Length: 615
Image (cartoon, rainbow, N blue to C red; front, side, top):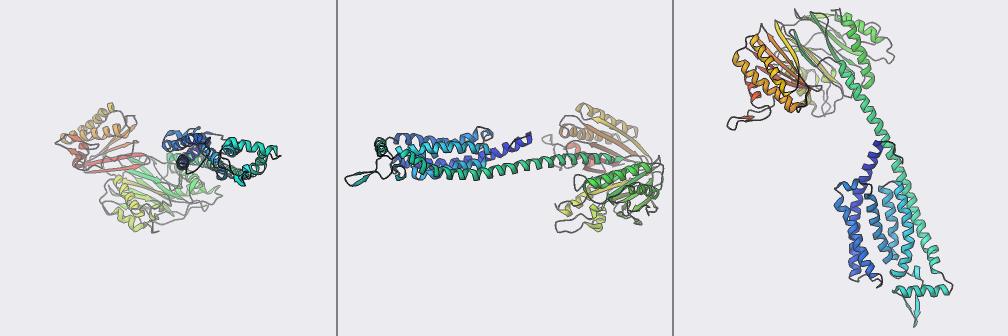
């Protein structure tokens, strides 16, 4: 088999290393046979000619040592070397040669063994080398066995008659004289052995070789095909991963917190790419639009249709505050050229950030959840028809008014239709119970709790559909707002702390709280720099928010470091007696003591930490 690229060579080498490992144990077993034969010859339980005895006492111990060596090398790098297979096979052949010289009657049975082993474990070329070597050595050993080994009537004929009895010579000089006598009497025993003894056995060995080598070539052809298929799969997987990155890059930032609204969204595809999407954007200074959708089907076609839908939404959302009008224009756009008859369910809402007025339209999508503080409920809404199916979209506007602190969560049916191992659905009842389980004033904490509820329910069952949800929280009131990016270097920690300190002094926070907040910030940022990014640098995003009406302060920290929930620390993390603290020790304990709320989540490769304080 011709190896054409590095992947082929790597797979071939791995296959050969596995073969070397198995053969090492085979040789180990053969070494025991060699050792037993050596002892039997040494103790003269098995008899051989005196001329052969010195050779046997050296040959069998040598073979035993050579065969046992691979057992000690099996866990080393040696089994990956190209010479190792030759060492194994020719060590095995030495034993076969020794046995065929000493007991040619039964030793003939061992010759196909090395060929079968070579063709079973190694490449066809090596199998052919062992086959040729076997034929040559088999003939040589046959003549040596005739002269030195046990007496074989097939090789030496009927022996010599002395005083009416047949005498079998064990002395090789007598055997040579016997062969000369037979030659003078017109019987060439060398030729007869070649024609009637060697050639039939060589034919049998050749048959073993042809069958095993044919199977060997078939095995390597299958290996070749398997490598090609694996190569194509890896290529497709890489392309799908790129497609996934492109798809996720079209989605908005996972979490934002402005003076008017907080928005968090997450998409978890069942495959590399999927048909779910969410989006939000500012239509104008006073209005923000939020949308979610679920395309029919899965995989690349659904992802492409999703991209077309989200692009159309962004094109038509600017300048309009009517969700139904926007959805009608999106429908007209995706309906054109939709030869595959795909469709998408959508829910679109537009919030007036000044008044809390929420106008929404539903195109066949799940009912959102709205409310706050354990008073969540499903939003009453008309279903409407799917987009992309018909030339016209049959959707209408409805509206409600959100109170400050209210949130609305849009989600896809991947949540309500999530299944456990028994085939049960998560359902709307469990969803609304999860919302009302605790008092979630922070939407990051809310999202994390919903995901935990789903994960607990499915209990490891495979995900069958995309899971997507996005939450918008209406802040209300007057906010002061500041955000900044920092490079994750230890020398920049003081700059981040200065930002927090200045913000606190500007808004007249109690000095004791400012000092504690600096300790907290020092702990948080140092952990991200040292343990998250391993001092290799990266982005740290810091957002500060203060509601002048409710006297509520919020600190948001976002980074792309290793997943690390700094809030997961027990009360034993800090030991005052030893003055030692673990990662996330003293500072995090202060967080839990001075902050009113705190929440963490890991979304799309980002650590999101939110800390809140109400004075």
